[in-house]
Image (cartoon, rainbow, N blue to C red; front, side, top):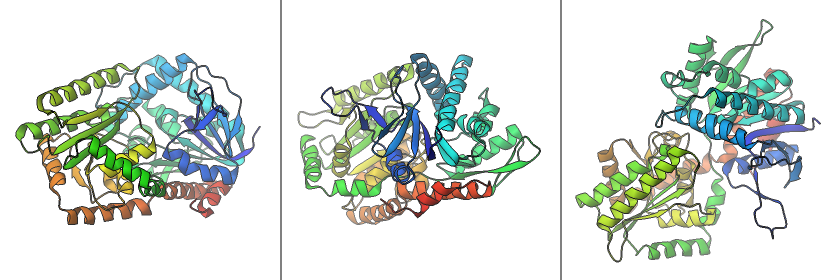
Length: 486
């Protein structure tokens, strides 16, 4: 039944199934900025969210949760293996991240990707109201915009690409490159993290499809001899800044930060890395640089400790298993060579932590190391900045993370340049308090002015304008733009 004026389509639902048998509810809200950004719009518009419930072969009827109507899309174990672990994460993910790892191109994975994308599009088409707005999220669902437009030409369709979009020389490797571009161009607005990503997409469209591309949009043939306009533009995503500020102000979290430093032996400097365990994050480069600094005598293990949090990720994928083994061997070697009875060079934590513990870690850390080899945005950099209510701390930030476009007062590094990375770490460790304050105030001003509400509002404003041009209502986007910042 078509009932929702605003529909979000994402690989996952914004809830997780409770594993605690004593829990009163079957579901709990998932953490994450996307849910935070879209929840107010969903509530104002009585919106629906289409997504996979997170477990293979789990058949669940649509249900309401916390003011949102949730529409589960069931995936079999074979779907998860071929569509998600296969095409999404072993083809698209490495290809779109500069081929740091080699992508694999398998026709059965592509067939599964098409099949599952059609299932998502059909679910969205069934729940969207006449003239409604649908916002598709991320690389797992690149075919959904066109499939949805074919099913429901009355809809206004947006798509946001959370990861990088590669340069044409890399993108052209994809055997199904034209089909993916055509899928994305089913949207009225195609959003990217960086201006460079939008430019890469436009170049691929020109080279592969020969469509006219301008700053005002891409001329997409409609099949009846006419054209429509698809806007491809950067809309850099952000965080719920106020949430991190509120947590950082809590006395219990500040006490926990002091406890963390004490547990580490109260070193003069705590350096911190927080990442999913992924080859794109530059964890190996970071460990190599830190180990060499100790070996060179530029940093003493009694004075500085690196805390590396690496949350588990894609543990059934062989390249991730190998990465974990390599990182843990490197940590063990460095600690074995340089640890003392009272001080450890690296504290390695292969686990995920709740947000409260992460904010305590941000407050405990003097230096935040973000050394991604390629990243769509990297919200950890923004979370660290938002948490530093004392206007202290130093952010060392890879120029290959999308956040580098916005956080100009960070120390920018090329993570492939190990000597340059080492120099940047020493500079951060030795930075005077006055310079820390000057840089951090500028960083925090940027993050506060451009938070996740600003991101969703700017995208939905563009989508509203596209809806009006296309003759559809655009009402949902207007409602989002007019809403408060709750």
